[in-house]
Length: 110
Image 1 (cartoon, rainbow, N blue to C red):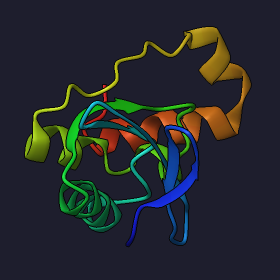
Image 2: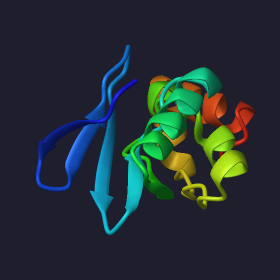
Image 3: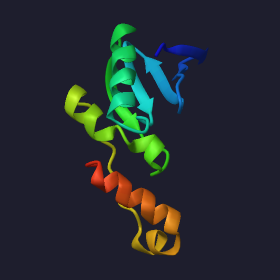
């Protein structure tokens, strides 16, 4: 997995699910962590190989392909895991949202 520049600080890591990366001052923020630990491991390695320190993870939403590697990234790098409280009313109204929330919780994502 190689870090590909889009423009300015915007980069991405290509894969089954692309992972966004924001780069600046020798640090990086992942926009999502991929589907699982394997994908997250490759993303962290690509960040380190680029000479960057992973400082943060940004999750745009709770689908498993965006937050499946959060627990691994937090454990491996010390980057704080994203925290979000899912509104109960929202998770009850949408079967998809509820599934995503449960999936992320099983993977150790608060």
